[in-house]
Image (tube, rainbow, N blue to C red; front, side, top):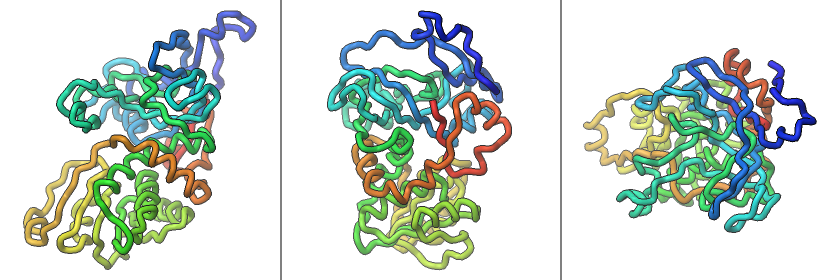
Length: 338
């Protein structure tokens, strides 16, 4: 649907208006004019948002109006995988630099923040998690400590730093390295990005899925990918990225190995007997912390192989129909251009 601004383009007030993708209620997404932030406090950076990746959570809020206990009760701007251009200077940031945005702002006061585990902060304000607005808007003013220089990358590539950070955090906790074997179950964008992180550590990486289309994307990115029922080996570590295959992960981890639960799917009971008798360690992974600089460096290293993840683009005005018609399901990742 064509976007039609309320103001004429020659109106002097137009500079104070920006476009935003606002989820007004379940399955009711509108492109609206909202106020452009015109004040940048000390310690903040103004960013011209250029690229926002569509995440599964955006789709879920659109289709269901909720994810677990997070319920859409009032209009909310979607988006949290963000690349843009700095419009003001900040710490290690100059105007005109390509930047990636860490979308969660912790309270900085609780026991988790004070111990450095800010991803567990109960009061964190995370983009596009009700009631916090996301980044599918043309401008953002964001704390400079959560804005990262991605000079040398395109804004589309910079938007991958957020989902890549999930993999960085999981692999960092795993301590895997050269000689270790890794299975990644779920070959969506997070699974593939986690595979790049695992490979960068020196481990041998295999991906699996039940969807041949996702396996094809993994293969295009240079990985060995197989249908789940073709996997026979056991691995030193399994990264479960689908949200639905924890029992499958148990079947394919070595005795004494580690399973990292990344995907947030349905609740299912794990086989305690298998876990204890095989001395398997199961780790829950929730978002990330202190990961963006590493994520950006890995994207720079593998940017040619990552091109299949940034090949599909749509304009902001196309987004309502794109979600309504389910077009997003045809692609491993879609980038919204603003």
